[in-house]
Length: 298
Image 1 (cartoon, rainbow, N blue to C red):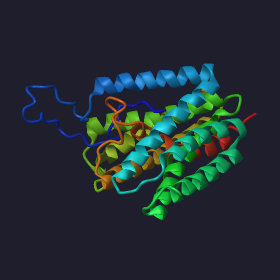
Image 2 (image 1 turned 180 degrees about the vertical axis):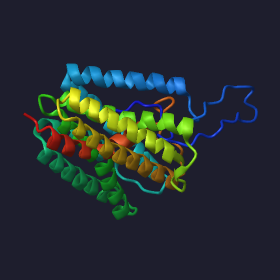
Image 3 (image 1 turned 90 degrees about the horizontal axis):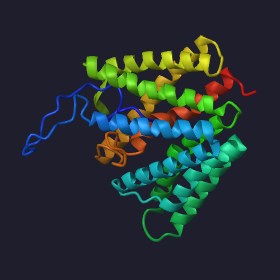
Image 4 (image 1 turned 180 degrees about the horizontal axis):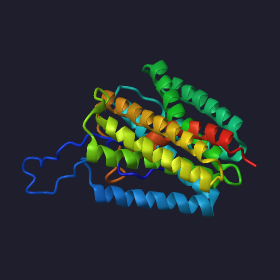
């Protein structure tokens, strides 16, 4: 659901790329430490898939999003294995896909109910799944269900109204602008680390670039797509840059604790699905609340 080339997070302090010994002159990644052409190509492809399904066939868009959330859940569960946790995979996959589907079909109450069923089902599945630390495994399953499926379900709520595609577009595009603006500013100007113990390459200059990009995007999309006042768009963008940055830092903290660089390798130049969903997931409930308040569905 997100496309910018930010495999290690937006707004980073660039590190000079050094070819590995014995690389035989192989081309090293760019200043940002990634294969930028591959990242851009994958990002454009994902963006095109979202736009086409969102505006031409909303149920198909929900299906695409459900698959993305299920893949993200798989990556989270696999990563938790590195900490010795064993949350049951199958009920979490089913719950992640079901939460956005029920949210889109029946609304917020259905989303909460589906989360409850997923958490209970995950606990029961693990309780009858054999020896081990059942409480820790079930708790990590609850975390996975909330982090991926429940937060992602708010994209389904955004999709519900007649102008749902425009709401989802405003949400995704503003968060993408946070990543792109932070990436550009971090590469060009990044010198002062923002959270060196969590994400050493993330810079305050990059955060400033994210903030400017988000507020401009929010003003543009809310005024043109939702026909609301520019000041509402600026506030929306300011909120999105905060939640997007928080989401990125939270996943960086998780990856640091586990000892991995990326949550997966499915998307060349980006990492895994969760490396693209991290900012969107934390931003989704705030986007739904603000867009509902600023532009009440007709």
